[in-house]
Length: 85
Image 1 (cartoon, helix red, strand yellow):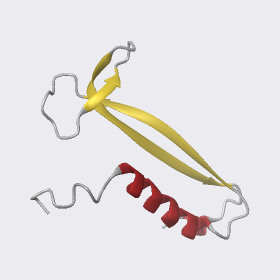
Image 2: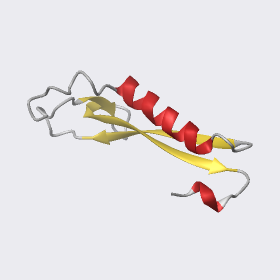
Image 3: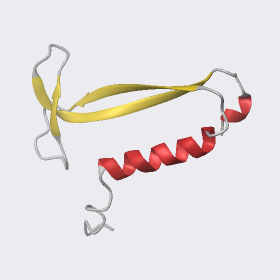
């Protein structure tokens, strides 16, 4: 695995699809749920040679080096405690 043999296997679309299938299986019998997504930028302004580093916005709106992440929170309106786990 350290030889980059999985690099073409693990892309963002495959990861997103797998997460969507996994969460939909867990939440399939819920009447209504809300998924709240938050795109976050992790700024690495002094880094130049990190793997897959891209461009993100700093707090002033300027482009800098970093990563974009997506955090998601699931809210179940039934307040069913079995959602956890």
